[in-house]
Length: 466
Image 1 (tube, rainbow, N blue to C red):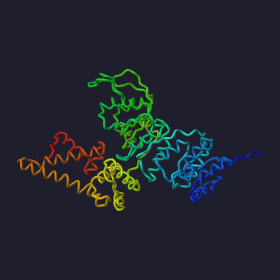
Image 2: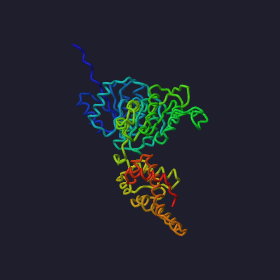
Image 3: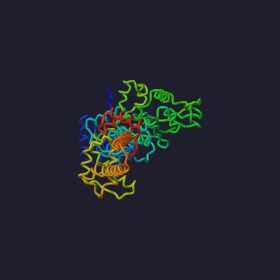
Image 4: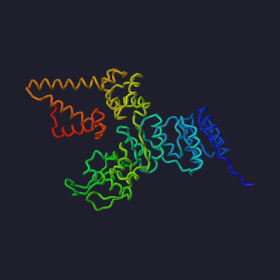
């Protein structure tokens, strides 16, 4: 009779008896034999007499934690290993994948997905590798919502690779923070991280910023300039707002990504580069490709792995955590006495939409750290930071200017004041939304055509201050 292959033996290590029970039952229902352990030490004891086909381990357990157990298992060539945790963050997920985990399950997880992950890991059966050096980086990315846990899982999974990553999301969602986390958790962490907002550089200067130039390449080029590719050699180049890059430069960037080499502007020396590209955009690149504003082949080069950041309104459960973090950080940075939110104030903040996303929430907390009168921030204080206190300040200044202007016999002060108001609001809105006119117009409550018309008028006839 032909011998039948023995069934794989699955080991579950988790100090939560309930988690062990439901997961073990689900795996047994799928036809897999399971052994349960309440700690890493129990697993090590059992290893003296048997070897598992796959291990699922929790991160936080009394005594030896799951990551230490994972490293020990991989060092002995035992695996694959799947890590589980209710405390999902960038550092933990990245450490798990770096140590050799084949998957990361964020609790609470769907049992069908957990069983599928086990079956997939058994089928793939990766070869055990020695753990990679640990990272000591700390990350500003915070969140406990399911959407952010998935972001952290993706960062942890792809950080150690050299794949290009495209980060998408609305303005203010933290795309550069994701890029920095990917760099800090990669093997390139000791090399430069260089960032460039391609929408903030005039198109005629962007080529020089990216690739550098030789002395005399154009008027004003008095000496050789190393571009961002050279500055980021061996490390990571983060290209923000890549969707706004001019088509001509898209062609040059594509050549660099395809061949790993380029010329400085006005140069003849071929320069080879070893740079990982992480790009970000708030735009829909598929739509930009369809309209002819973005090259399809460049999109495919950049969009190897995509990480989509959710807007703050889709992760409201994270708002209290973020608000308390930003308030404490502002107090430390500005050397102010620490303040705290009342429960009612946190609830009120969580109900706001924050069209400027995390950046807008951070700015609100900085204002509260300075303006809120008491140690405890109340719901009424949220209004004074934006409506009463701020309005009283600028309207009082306007009143003083009007009194002096009328006393001096000046004329047409209403027109001058209105022009100054328009100019100030337009500039601040554009700065807040990084030059994106549609977003700036929406924040001001005007149409984009209205904003464009007023912006053109203010540039043609820049008003004096009232």
